[in-house]
Image (tube, rainbow, N blue to C red):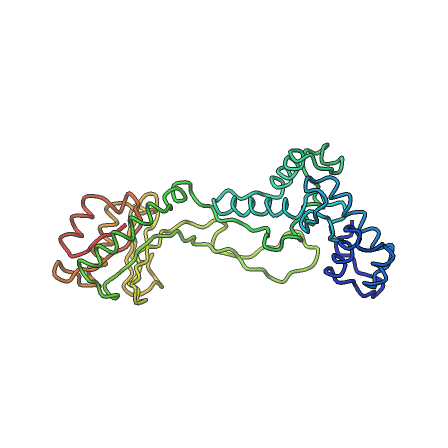
Length: 328
């Protein structure tokens, strides 16, 4: 099937509004087919096809003889289209909503859904849909072209815990607590800090390189084929200034040369897993106090997520004694 057909003759198209007016005049019996074609400057055969399509659509609907632009089939691009424009808009709305709640549908899932949708609505569709129990790939391509607001995207993996925790109730609680703390201490933006961890691989993905055409294997020399995951913990203020970061290595014993080439003032610790732990988070609080000079009389606000290593008793006691207000 040709998806990108190019016209061979440059024949001027009849405006859609003109065609709709002509079809309505014929269906309402205000004028004959020949008169309407002459008045609006339309070929008689073209007008006849559009009038026949509109009559068939009206006969199959419950709307009587009243013209309905969304269901009348007046569009010349709707030839043998399975769903009406309104039905496709409902399908588009469902796909958008599924993506927003982190349960987006793939091409295969969408084609199966379209088949079940068509069966439920008693639509006429190709026999191949029945055999494969899903809509055809050509229908899928055309559907995506008719709805440019949809596109095939690669999603980011989001854990169920993070997705379920991000809701209106929890967000309202955070901002209410933030407003209470800000009202009590009246923090300057330079005294508001945010911290979070992320994983960094020691081997980055190689960029695209120029190689010989037809060569099956193209390699790139790196330090190792599979890198080691190192936890990077950054601390940044509301004014944009940042503290030297902390690195957590998957090693029981920390070596000083691990920090070679890092930002001056960076610190590093080793854990068996390479992840943040409760004792290491206390070390991070000590690192923050060193650079912010926080005291009970001149405290700072530290925003963080509610990871189990951040809410240990030792961390809370150290923060209270050294003027660090924790808000998760």
